[in-house]
Amino acid sequence: MPLSELRDPDKGYLVNDLCIVEVEVSVRNGIKILDDQESGELLDFRGLVRIERNFVPLLEEVCSSYPSLIECFKKRSASRTFVQCAFTALGRLLHFLKTTKVKDATPDACKRLQLLWEELETFKFSLGWLEPHVQSVLVMNKRAGRVNRLREDVDVLENEIRRRRAMLAASEADLQVAKRDLAEAEEECFNKIDMDSELGYPLA
Image (tube, rainbow, N blue to C red; front, side):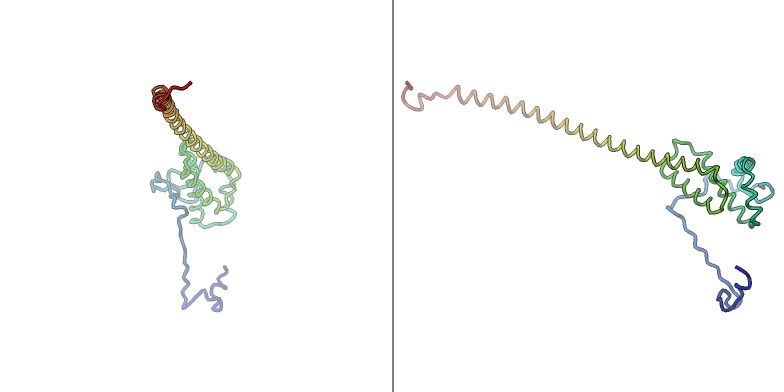
């Protein structure tokens, strides 16, 4: 915004020579973006800004391979604070990818990766070289989630089959007992009753 617009009394930005800027900060999904391993120690990064010590070697490596990461900020004449935030965001993402193994890519870890990626995208880096890798991790996690859900379905069905087999075995045992009882009852009923004596006369 031009200073002339800021100072224009009709615009209402300045009241009694005072301009109040309000910033709302929120944490999405309640997932921590900062790395637990951040030491707080800052090192100079290529004379541009001071960056978290753990991130500097990773940034040096990618900026050597992709010089446009630095050139884009020189062309924009961005403030040091903006550049520091941008390279810190890139460092966080690179550190996450470097330290997180495939087997550790839990749903929470992938949500954190998604947040790191969204944060990094706001700085308008040229990220064509990095996006396929990030997306492959996120897609793999979605597939792993589907595999886990299908595995749970299979476990439920196998447990249900075991339960029903146990019920069938119990029913078959009951059936055998019922057949034995029936045979004994039939034998007792028809072999021990003297029909002649009950009727009182012999049958011809």
